[in-house]
Image 1: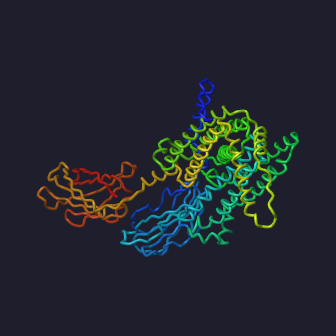
Image 2: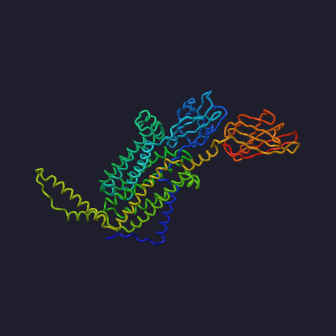
Image 3: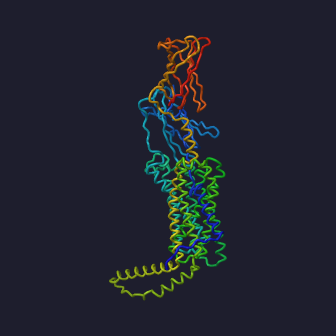
Length: 638
């Protein structure tokens, strides 16, 4: 019998249900992640600013971060052009209110030149961050210190840590979703081997991944060397941190989960009295929910939900988010295994899971909208940041997933009413009818090979008979294929959302971009030279002013001003003043009073240009007690 795709139902209620499901899932894809997204700290400012040139050495170098960070005496290093440290390795806490700011003091008497600030920290959400920038004292030098180009948390260790994180999420989904599928949808599944292997496999995967993350934590947040994974001193330090405590708590909860699994597939599976089994189901459901919530909380308490905006609300929301994801995706994988490995799952069990999956997605929307507000902030961030672009990729994936799920729901509605016992009985009857007569093999060792061959043939026949029974219902065949497609898309979706956990959130990224836009410094190719005519209106009030700003960039500059009369000869004046205004940043006017050094010539040293931008340079010339004029020109500095 050839399976055909089910016809679309045209009733208003079914159309409304499908439309609601698609809308809910698309919103969930836009505003929610299958796992919580991280909120890495980022450097939002520094003093001195990146690329700045200061006249004299500052007393300290200060860094401002977007959120709380963990630092030590070696987290901020100031290196001279030869690579030697110029700081005192003394960390200074400059935090005030919501401002997260730390600094290091500089040694006295350090020479002029270009200095490199290399920093490394651990975000409050447990992710390591690092960076480097330069500033100059007096004037830039020809060389500067060389720092590692690989960011902390990258390389082989970063890749292994990412794989372990993905495996932990996947294991949690299989463990939680598989157990929930048994208790809420198909209690007889507790006796089915493939279902047991899904749940136990999830527990083993999550346990192994957690141990790997605990060992990799030291090199992941520090040196990046894989050999440091077995550094006992480093492991001891990790256990004293919030992420380390969360991983240890997860291992302890996994011990409780092992007890839960043993009862589920032991005493519960063997219980035959329905009343007793019902009571035990209730107890397992309560206990399992507590353990699952505790496991989910190990992420919420140590990662992005515990920091930033409204952590008291964000942490329980994160727990609900993870539980909904695990129930949905873990149950989907369990259903797929059952459809392929067990011929007797009832239609009612599939329908129950379909309803549970729908409400799981609804919870994802409710929690995901809130998470999106915390992490994205604006609609423009969806296209302007890497984080937002990854969310858009998720939209496409979930759209395909929901479309496939809608086909699965139609196959489910068309399932025949074959019950599990009927299918199993049919299998037994066919086995008995086709089983060959027992073969007696002489116990002399000569026919051992023949006996093994017959055993393999009988196993192959049994497998083939089971497959024929399983495939006898064409609707189940169609359902298996669409659920397989759903599971495949879900695996890719989980991978994309795992990448999100290592991507700078859109809200933070935009804040960093705004900060950099206000402090970015670019070195000019040559000094600024301007030449402007002037006329003070009095007798002999006409002439030309020439101004040179060298090197014509942010930081300290030398200023030269000269006046010429209409014949090109030096022209003296009682007073010449200069001012600088950056209207875009509401800076200035910054006055400069150059000193007269000769007839028609004025100079000033150490003229400070605090930031790059389009500056208005104004020159005021007074040729008598009452005759004065100001001329100006806009130039790009830095």
